[in-house]
Image (cartoon, rainbow, N blue to C red; front, top):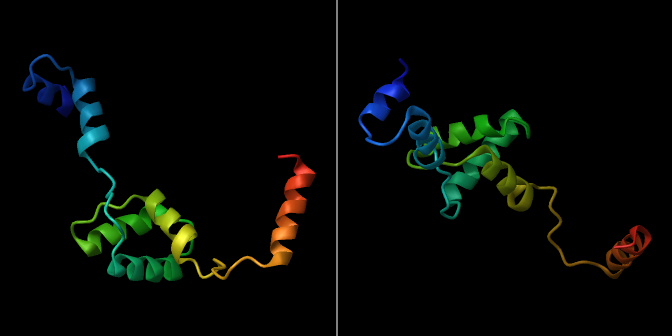
Amino acid sequence: MNDWQNIARLVPGRNDNQCHYKWQSEYKSQPQKAPWTFDEDLLLKQLVAERGQKQWQEIANEINKKMGNTKRQGKQCRERWINFLSPDIKRDPWTAKEDLLLLEKQKNIGN
């Protein structure tokens, strides 16, 4: 008998698969939906510099370990890096030349 069968015995009307699914989907590791803190951003930058842009779940695990109450997922770390923290992000206003290039490319693909 597995642990989920033992747990299901304590939850009338539920079987082991239902208990396991409920745990996985709602209680195990809900991603943190709160805004990123300055300290989380600093740690994410440090970890990406050390480990690169591949092992996002390992990076998330390290952030969660070091920050205490956070529950960041690998996907959240990746998206935070790509959309906000990467030094490759060009933040200045679009130039007329860039606008024309975008319009031309869009016209060529027909969308």
